[in-house]
Length: 142
Image (cartoon, rainbow, N blue to C red; front, side, top):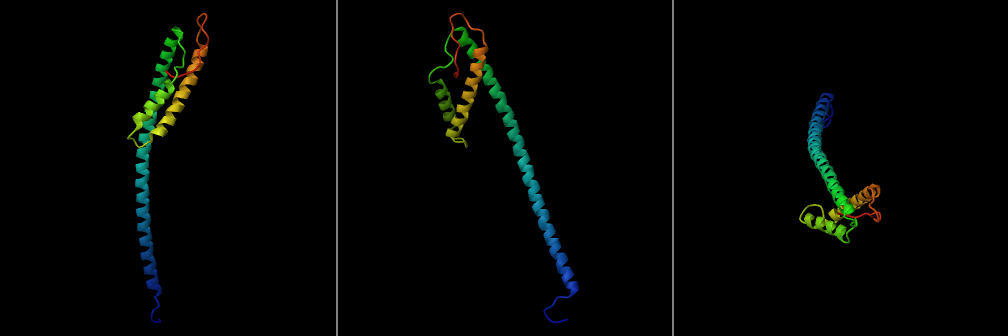
C-alpha cells in the first residue's frame, strides 16, 4: 500500500467512528428538541389556562354590563355615557404600564372589548320591552 493511503479496514473504522459521532450529535439534537417541545408544551398549557380565565372574566363582565343596562333601561337613562368608553380604555392603559405588553396594545384590546360589549348591549336593549314614551336605547359602555 502506498504511503498516505488508508487501508479499507481503516476506512471502515473511520466511517464507523464518524457514524458514532453523527449518532451522538443527532441524539443530542433530538434531546434538545424534546426539551424544547416539553418547554413549549408547558408554556402552551399556561396560555390555555390563562385564556380560560380571560374568557370567564369576559363573561363575568358581560353579566355586569347586562345588569347595568337593565338599571339604565328601567330608569330611562341613555346607554351611552359620553366619555365613559374612553375612560375605560385609558384606565386599562394605565393599569398596563410596567408590564411587558405596551399600554397602547392593551388600549387597542380594550377598545375592541368595549365595542363588542356595546354592540351586544345594543342588541339586548333592542330586545327588551320598552316603557311608554321611551325611545329605544343605543349602544355604549357601562
